[in-house]
Structures are given as structure tokens and as C-alpha cells.
Image (cartoon, rainbow, N blue to C red; front, side, top):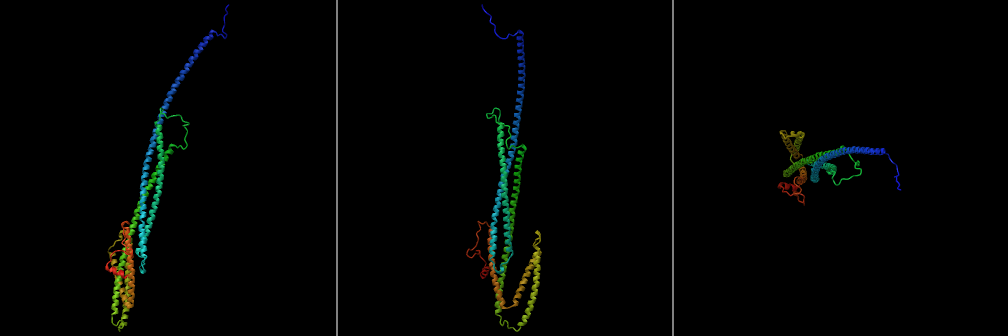
Length: 449
């Protein structure tokens, strides 16, 4: 007989079954509602994040472009500053080179002045006088040495300014290279997008790198470099003007001193020639007077000799009194002439007073010379005449030597007017005299000297 098998386990009631079905439906409805809310929230979040991401990327793109423009403006400013600094360095280097050439050119005037002073040390006896030529030559040496000191100082200042310009240029160049690298990096960043193949996640990209600066510090650094470079350019420009002024001023001072020295030298040569001719004339007259005295019959035996001596002494006294008065007149004329040399600027005019005083001096000098000659002729006899002859001949030798030396000085100073490469001194190496033709009179005078 067959048996009924029963499945083991709990048996639910029908209400339980209906309740379970309703619970499952309610849970499904609740889960669908929750899923719908999440989907809606996800869509809103996606839209918001997409918009935020797009705006953030757009804003950063704009900031990158603005930053590139700002850096590029500074780069262009630095480019201009670099060009200006390079141009100023070249200009200052040329001025410095000109100052060095001017400094080197001062060696020739100094050598010539020292050579002239050395030559004039060979003068003898009474001609070793501190005349205006020697004073002007010493003054010329002082002017040249002062010019060399001034030019050397300007050369040193130019060298220091060149170093400062190079330092400013180095700072500008360093800043300029930084701007170039920053531009390259920012342009690369501006060109990147989400489809670029070389984008990736980085480790801690939001960190602040060491040495970071604020925008204000960045701008102040570039502005400081620019201001520094402009200040050095301005200082260099002023220094170039000062160097050019120093070169021109030293050249003018040296040229003025050269003219004054050569004027004094020519005047001294004329005075020497005049004194030389005067001595030759005196020598001739003394010789002539000696011959006349030697041929006078009964010289010193005239019965009226004592009376003649007394009359001569009286004449001598009168001549001496007259000579003293003329000397006072000459002192007066000299003092007036010397005092009038201190008239200022354009007032230093060679007016009729000047010519009148000059003529008066010459007239007095001639008068005094004539009185002295008469006085000398009246004081003694033949021995004094021979002594005077010897003295004149000795002085002629001194004057002849001085003339040769001063003419050598004039010949040496030709180098200051003629370029050294073209200057050929006309000097005989055997007797160290200039190879120029002298007049017969001068030749005879130099032979006697």
C-alpha cells in the first residue's frame, strides 16, 4: 500500500505568503525610488562638476594667457634694457679707449718739456737765469702731469663703471633667461588639454616648491633690475660726457700752455739775438775805441789832464744823477706796464697807452744805455776797455751758446705740431746743432762765441 511523503520544514500560512509578496513589492518600489533619486542627484552632480571643471579650466587658461602676456611684456622690457646696456657698454668702452689714447699722447709733450729743460741746463754763467721760458716749461710739465692725473682718474672711473654695467647686464640677462624659461613652460601648459598624450597623475602636485615668491616680489625683482640698469646707464652717460670734457679740457690747457711756452721761447730767442747783436756792436766799438786811444799822441801827458779829470768827474757825477733819474723814470714806466697786465679779460687791450708806455720804456732803455756807455767811456782808460772787451767776448760766448740751446728747444718742439712718424729732426749728430743755414753775420758771431 502506498505511503504519502511529506517535505520536512516549516509550513507558512497563506496570509504569510501574501504578506511576503506585499513586502517584496514594497521593497522593490522603495529601491526603485531610491535609485531614481540617486540617478537624479548623479546627473545634477555630473552637470555641476562638468560646468565647474570647464569654468575652472577656462579660468586657468585665461590666467595662463594673462601670465604669458605679463611675462612677455617684462621680457620685451628686459630685451630693450639689454640692448641699451650693450650700447652703453660699447660707447663707454670707446670713450675709455679715447681717454687712454689721450693719456698716452701726453707722454710726448712731457718728454719734450723735460728735454728742453735738460738742454737749457747747459747754459753758462750769467745766462743760467730763471727766465720766463724756464717758468713756462716748468708750468708745462705741471700742466701735462695734471692732465695725465685727470685722464688716469677718468680711465679708472670708466673701468669701474664698465664693471657696474657688466654686473647690471648680468642681472638683466639672468632675469631675462628666467623669463624665457617661464614663458616656454607656461606656453606648454597653455597648449595642454585632456587629449594630450603626455598628461598623467603626479605625486603631490599642489605642494609649494622651495624658493617660491609672491607676484609682488616677482614684479619688484624685475623692476629693481630694470631701475638698476637704467641708473647705471644714466651714470655711464654722465661719465662719458665728463670724460669727453676732460679730454677736451686737457687738450685745450696743454695747447694754451704750448703756445705760451713757445711764445716765451721765441721772445727769449729774440732777446738773446738782440743782446748778442748789442754785444757784437759794443765789441766793435770797444775795439775801435781801443785803437783810437792807442794812437793818440802824448796820451796822459796833456798839461790840462788834471783839469780834464776834474771836469770829467763833474760830468760823471752829473751823468750818474741823470742816470738815477732815468732809472726812476724807467721804474715808473715798468711799474705802469706791469700793473696794466692785470687788467681782466677783454680789458687787456694794447691801446695807445700801452704803445706809449712801451715806446717810453724803449726810449728810456736807450737813453740809459747811452748814459751808461758815456759814463763807462769817461771813467777809466785802456785797461778798463780791455777788461770790458774780454767781458763782452765772454758774454757773447754765453749768448751764442744760449741761442743754440734755445733754437734746439724750438726744433725739438716741432714734434708737438708734426706727427711723430713724419717728424725728421734736422740735427747734425756730430756737433748736435741744427742743419740750417745761418746768415754770414750770425756765422761770424757763432765762430767768435
